[in-house]
Image 1 (cartoon, one colour):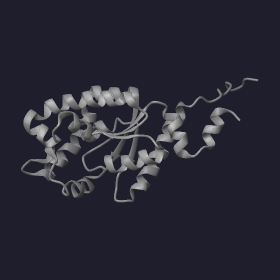
Image 2 (cartoon, helix red, strand yellow; image 1 turned 30 degrees about the horizontal axis):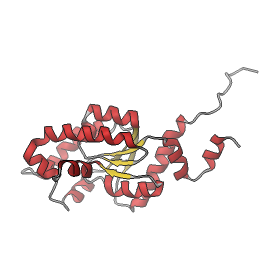
Image 3 (cartoon, helix red, strand yellow; image 1 turned 30 degrees about the vertical axis):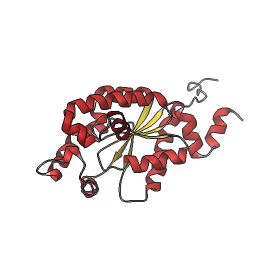
Image 4 (cartoon, one colour; image 1 turned 120 degrees about the vertical axis):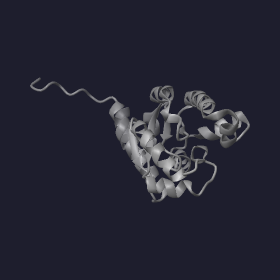
Length: 205
């Protein structure tokens, strides 16, 4: 049996890790999409590390992200965020959860494309609004009308998130359902990169 054939009959988790090589699975999407909670479960299923970019930023800055926004502003935060993610991408394979605004940076998108594969956890406005209302530490929603701000952010960010090669719907179902869908979608995407015997041209003997 060839190595490729063995890969195809292995468990989905083993198939995916083998197909990833040193690349990272990078979860992108809006705040409240479930990147951290789903990401931890996905990493556990694949037996690879889970890294939360926001937690890494907080550890390196020795302050919370809301404190960082308040002291240094969003532009400074975004520059630091891009540097942290670029560094983290050198340590795959892993599941990397990113902040809601990270994928908006063109250099970050290029780094993810080079060292990983982005998965957009796409959630509807109503789902996101219900989830983000459970927490009061979202710097981007500290406005006079957080619900309207969320809607405006979605309008700007969704077309950029859509550039991710894999999209999975984040909705009110068990996390394991989302994990299963991510694994299946990634396998479908990455399977196209596995070497296959070339078919002879039509009409060839």
